[in-house]
Image (cartoon, rainbow, N blue to C red):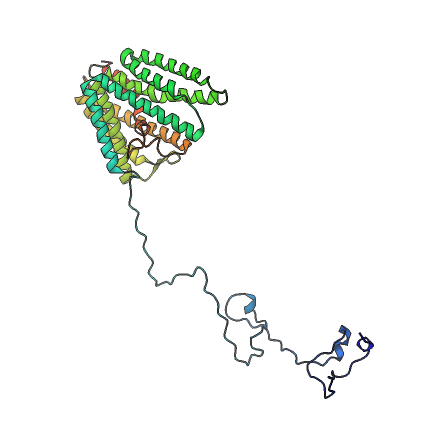
Length: 374
């Protein structure tokens, strides 16, 4: 770099190689303090802040920008294309689509449920009025299948290994002992079943022992022991009609709850346990069961009275609802909808026994109080 670039004042303009005159608009090279000697260019006019119509974005605040008018007398350039908002407001006059109302459904295959229910009813009634021992065998099969479903779901969902073999053998023994020896035989069989569960589980590692045997004792009480009261009803002279009354009242209670709740249900009964159940459905269950109870006790039970049937129907509606809620609580804890898939339209055997099991001791006890053990 030569000395003329440092400290020497430049000429008025920069002379090119041909020395024919200054080249206008070209600033000479040099440091910042040479700027006063540089040729000045035309200054950019300052446009006052005149807000335009629109938002408060920077481009609308009147700042000069390339491509815009330099003076107010100039014709403004066309505004650049602005994209439409992502969620435009609908026009006031535009017709809005009307959502279709959702049709209520039962949530299951109603045809299959009715067909399976009628088939089970025929088998139960035929065995009930032909040979009592055959009906006891039907109860034993239902108990064993129910225990299998319950223990299977416990193992799949929670890792709880309740021993099925002693439960199945002890459950069958409970039902038979109740029919042959009465309530005393049922209690003895229950105690022996609980002991068998404790011993059977000892053959496996101790981890989870208390959890598994607790679930086993619970299963023994919940399924076979409660089912034993059906066998106790059967031992009376009018035993088949008592059992029929018990079955009819439970089914009618469930049907009334479903029919009234599906049509008029608005207020949830227990939304955290079973969102589908309503208080209106419970009233339907009570009404249907009380009417059916009055008819059954008047015409089926020896020495029965219609007012006793009203109380019996009320108790059945309450116990059946509580039983249904109890199994719903178990299924919610396990995270499943049904206990099994054996019965199309119903789920598993346990899904049909949920309201029957807790209702059996209630009906047995009230009939003993009203008309005796027979």
